[in-house]
Length: 311
Image (tube, rainbow, N blue to C red; front, side, top):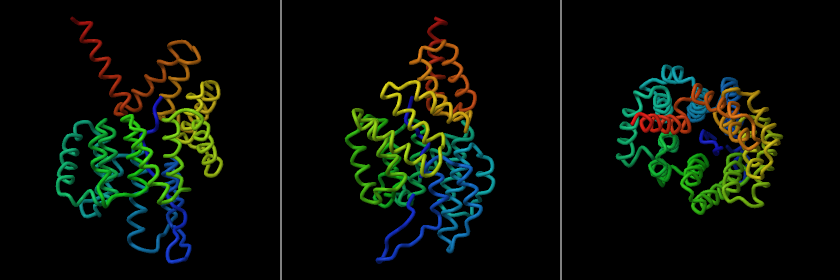
């Protein structure tokens, strides 16, 4: 199984000048954080922000949810060349994810933005670049984008945490988490990042990670992302039947969710189910998510095996 890569991300209230100010976009943003993508889109369509900056942020959040749903054409067609740089960044991600043939040109354009030393100071631009490099498996380059001194937000810190965990740098990931807790300890995204780090450390912290996911599910509703978090914690504790039950619930909500399929494959193997059952989940993953890092890795291994057999 793997820790969820698609992360995309929360504050309900902001304490400023002694006054508690309501975050108008909390429901939109939080829905995105927990993987409730259609809910994010629905909330964005109901929301009427009070100023232009919030209107732009609302669109960014909505289009990011659409990218997560695979609605690349909609994002590409609705975001124009005249739109703000944050929206352009989301469009680049949609273009990258949509067609393999466009990826090199999108990465080349992103590299130019990295080289100008200014663009990556926009947190959304840095985040979308980080997501692209993460999808490519280039976590070091993703971190270069995310660690721009002017781009530090809960979102960029969360993705940096994931990248460091994937590089087996739990020590450095823990430092990123500490920064997130300084910004907002009780934010949904901070709780998610804390759970990832706890699972990576193993030990008794895995149980705390499970409770974090469970608490978020009870508070905001179950989503495949949160159910997979609980299931991953169960797998690490050897509770494979509990994990399978959670994953079946996740599959009912989204039959083609990539992480659900990966974790079901893992659980099926641990439970000793017939080989064809576990293989079925991988086949479904490759059919529905051909660009997923796991699908790409499997395709590469299959090609290597065929070459060896041909010799």
